[in-house]
Length: 352
Image 1 (tube, rainbow, N blue to C red):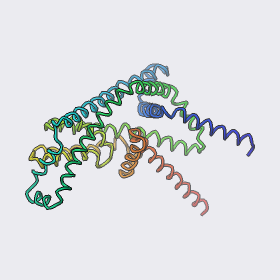
Image 2 (tube, rainbow, N blue to C red):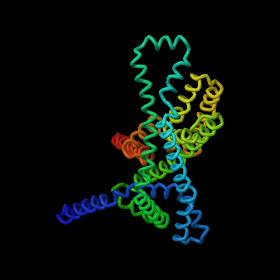
Image 3 (cartoon, one colour):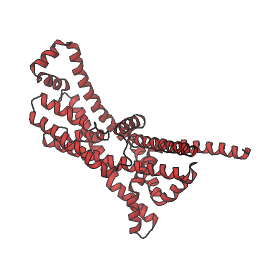
Image 4 (cartoon, rainbow, N blue to C red):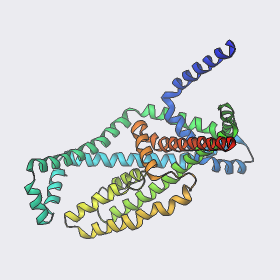
């Protein structure tokens, strides 16, 4: 290999690493701009046709649609969640809500044979369990209180990131086709592999955001309305938690409604407990099976255990960005190894 080509590759590697380091502080803004551009690009095409093919005007309208339909409502819901969580924390801190008393009430509501069984256990362990229950509620409320303080202190940073995201989103809408072709041409892969991986990338992003998020919102709304109708508070916060946890397949929503139903059963509120179980099993549990095939599609669906592990792993590493990035890399991993296996089989067939 000529010295000039080696030097060029070294320069290319250096400037690429430098560029990534420069934009790394804004990676969340760039990433979500890319996500919104992929999810809303079919709508953008329709808008572009409606304005006579003027790309800049169509891009501006598409950005406005994203802001009105998704970003502003999402920020309002996030603010409401933080506010209600902060109020819960204040009520627990002031003693208006005593978590340990609630734990004792649930314990005393157990059948006599279970109470006798618990009495035979180490009383210190039972008391420690009550203290852990109280500490968990305090830490959860403190998390929301801390988020309220952080949001107030980082308003300028938030608006900078928000502005960068909208700015990048505008150019992704306007120049997305050309940028996509450039990226595909730059990848050191065959045209067939590039098309397959880019199609998988696009379909997984759309399925994860559009499909899974809609399913999670529907399950969260059903849960929140059920809590409100049964007089279980804070209904909005419980519904919001159900929405977030519903992003985890199979077990997500049940992490919220099942413990609440068990607590209602222990304290003697049998009707709310029965209603929660019926709604959880017959309504919330069926939403995933009914909505996932048309919204996500069979082609992009990963096994539930892969989605669960990749989602949790992505969130643990990257925060909320991980709920998209985790399944995305899992899908690309499966697609890349699928291509490798197909080529191995093709080579073996050629040899034979």
